[in-house]
Length: 91
Image 1 (cartoon, one colour):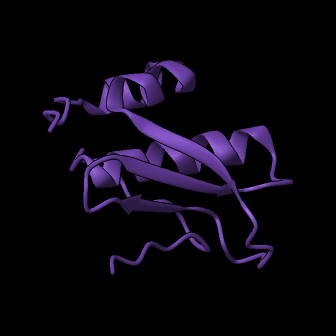
Image 2 (image 1 turned 180 degrees about the vertical axis):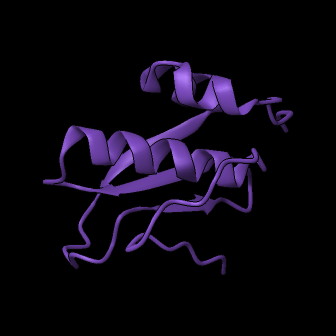
């Protein structure tokens, strides 16, 4: 079982996304969900590991921002909420 990294807001926002994914052990994959309201999802596996599902066909900046925000959420990093129309739901 790995120990969750201690992340700061500055680190989440400033680290190149591929490096942030590697440091956190988050696996990014393309989602097949095509609903325009779906911006991404984080899934914590029972056996460990975190999956980040991101829709295809979105702009690079949207993907980058949402991915960083979701990583911050799963690692309890205090970031301001995304503006509407973005919302997050924890299940």
